[in-house]
Amino acid sequence: MFSRLSLLTRQQRAWVALYSLSTGCTDRAEILAQNAVTEADLAEFIDSWLRLRSRTAMRNY
Image 1: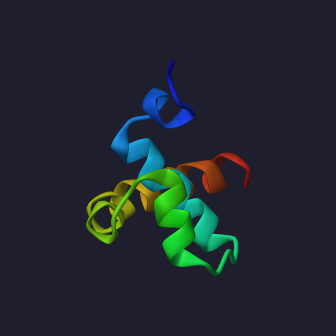
Image 2: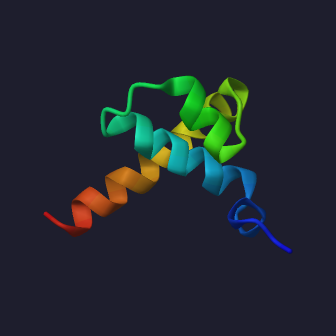
């Protein structure tokens, strides 16, 4: 049986965690655990997440 996390790449899970953190979810450790990512994963993928958010914002402008 596959978990929902197994369907997402590490990058996608980091993006989900970064989005959750950006919305004001404050339990950082819980968000990392729920998405099976580390602080290092967040650091690795934050630039691509920011580019993704920027493209989305420009599309809605």
